[in-house]
Amino acid sequence: MIMDKNVKIFLGVIVVLILGTIATAVLRSNSGPNTPADSGKYDVLAQCLKDSGAVFYGAWWCPHCKDQKKLFGTSAKLLPYVECYVYPDTKNQLPVCRDKKITGYPTWELKDGTRLPVETSAGVTLKTLAEKTSCALPE
Image 1: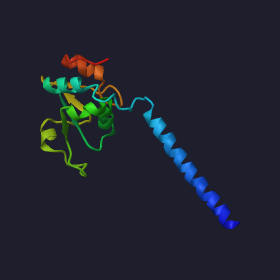
Image 2 (image 1 turned 30 degrees about the vertical axis):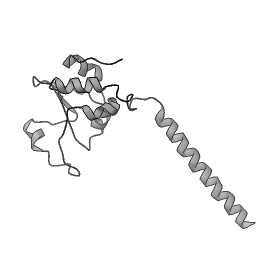
Image 3 (image 1 turned 45 degrees about the vertical axis):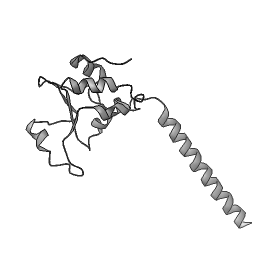
Image 4 (image 1 turned 45 degrees about the horizontal axis):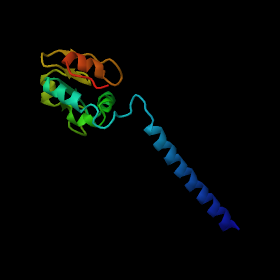
């Protein structure tokens, strides 16, 4: 009798864990501001940004830099990204960023030296990046 009660409790816990996992997966798949873009949707934009001479300076510990990359989805791998710190260090900026006087993250610098101000918690909007670099923004 006690064994039956323990088995029922155990099975109940397993069911709750399974339902929780399913709910989490469903919630993460819904669109939202931090949901990755469609696979490869922004490849052309990311490559154009790189070809235009734009550079994205960031830090591994910066949540806004992570959000900026999320805007590009899987295309983030093509971004002209420069990491300003070596993991796990958060205090010693790398010379490439120190010499450029990068003081905030994310920082986008254009070929002419112009820096784009951060517009949202996710950094610079894709629309602004496209406009400032004459790159096409996919619809």
